[in-house]
Length: 342
Image 1 (cartoon, helix red, strand yellow):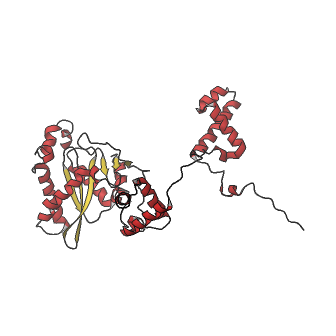
Image 2 (tube, rainbow, N blue to C red; image 1 turned 120 degrees about the horizontal axis):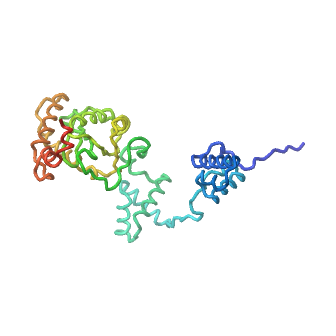
Image 3 (cartoon, rainbow, N blue to C red; image 1 turned 180 degrees about the horizontal axis):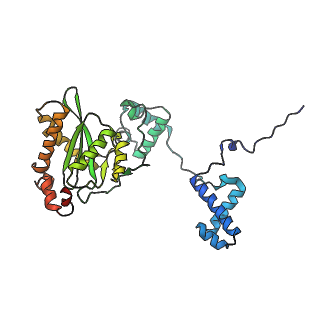
């Protein structure tokens, strides 16, 4: 007895579900159905194409793909080139970089490229060294630098699908309350006591508001946001923060509720938050290192409030030509913003 079986059209079709289309494919399918409906009701071809906002050649290319391959034919094709550039690294270069990286496991592509040129006479671009390092990491021949800092996996990149937006290069505050810089630091007034110091600085007037908490969480950041709303002498128009987890979740949701734009700085760019970063040292040396009161949060919050008033109304500020932040604000921005104080 001879047994025959019906062979599937292609083994590739086993994992293809043509019932699920991307948004682009669904849009094309909808336009084809709308075109056919308009034509059935007596519309001319030109009118129907104008209604679906599609060129004639493009539309019939979709129809042809639909007839030939079914609904899956409406999916956009890959635009990657047929002939891709291949890596031209020689094995000697790969082994050389592998040996250097094993000898200096915490060094990056820039240092390794410098050593290759200075010590061994091999001039290789920094980007090429970086690609080879990535290739070696993917092959598990070397560990990424984060491995030696105790991180078993790479930090997940921030996704911007909620209220927060990416900070764009060149953004600057032009009026008080715009792009308020918020950050936090850990302070140890005495061994065993950790204080989380949140602070917000206006880049225009230099007015700074601070508060201390027990933890660096999004709940505490949310409370600090509500606190600075009552302390700044003008409305908070927008905020910029780094990518810390304390400025996500509850903090981001609260910014959305208050309709305050939130901008997140790129990784490893503290200079873009320079105003509030500079205040880290000021508060650390002028307040915490000279604090003589009880080491309780209630007492420290009270003294910190007094120091913030001192900082904003009495301490001269070099960037403001030795004026105080509050005096500069009153002198330069009287009128509409000043009326917010009363």
